[in-house]
Figure 1 (cartoon, rainbow, N blue to C red):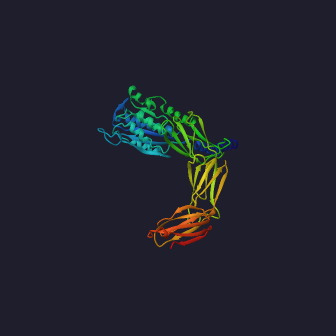
Figure 2: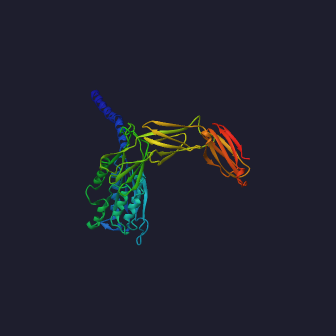
Figure 3: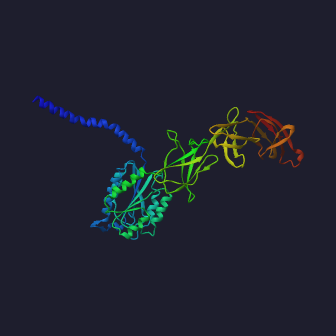
Length: 470
């Protein structure tokens, strides 16, 4: 008896211990699964549900609205098993009674977000057939439902009818593609004839509600998009042809339509490789890298379901223009005009005491001091060229009345070079580079030239001077 008891006791201990060990052993698995889900691209599925008046009709002995609700619930359950998926619900024909109905009776009722499955199911179950069928309008409006076009975005329409608002679902599909929103919608038809179903051939994949394994087929296509997603990396090449340039805004254009699509700030990942992005593959792209000056890529047609690389030659160096002996003098705010040495085209106006990246090359600078400094600079690859600007002094001018005049810098051989004109104000402030200057002025009320006043002054850095013009 003791032996039997011990044997039973051991079996019980073993049975109770298995779940504990299994749970313990699964922790690394769960962590791995969690990381895999986070790494997989986000998929968004918008369900467009037909709640129009015709759904009150019967098909195969059941109300079509009941069939549609069952389909929607089963579809949601199937979709929710896909890793990293979000679902939203748009409904048309549910508000304005038919007749007459309203061709704008279409609304996003539950937007994309996590943990909204229960809310979507409850909303579907509460729907009552009411209005009309605006399919084109619903599809076009759906482009606003997706938060962005960087994820794998899909649309599934559950309907029993065709367009009733003189719309064209084919045009809607084309519009969605131009927005990069939809790869290929699915249409689940309830009781449509073969002629009616052909209307949707230009829109997407049409499936009859009676089709076997309908949900399995849809989920397989969506999951296959994850595996065969079209990806793109932009290589910003340095002078050695290596993709090491980064932190540049890149604008994507549809080259056929010459229309803007979207922007990305280029980045390098943790192993110093250009970042990978997911993009619609049906568009032929032209990219502009907003370096200074900007550079364009070649026009590129992507290989669908593959990883694509677009190179752009953007070797860069940097320019730092700074003030000698400290920051800005007094309240002076200076800028630097940067232009191409050969074409004289202005590429940038850079603030003093800042560093800006430029494409490798030779540039001319107009440093907007008084007087203006003109110089040239060569920007080498991966290095910073520095230009120093002498510190200025402050000149204050006071007069009893308004007048006209100018400031001149005294050059070698006592030659006067114009710097700037004076304003009509009785109090003026100028920030001048170190040197000798002559102020020439005449009061407005003094009509004769013999009343012209000349004042001379030598400006030194960081010093403030006052000249009274009377």
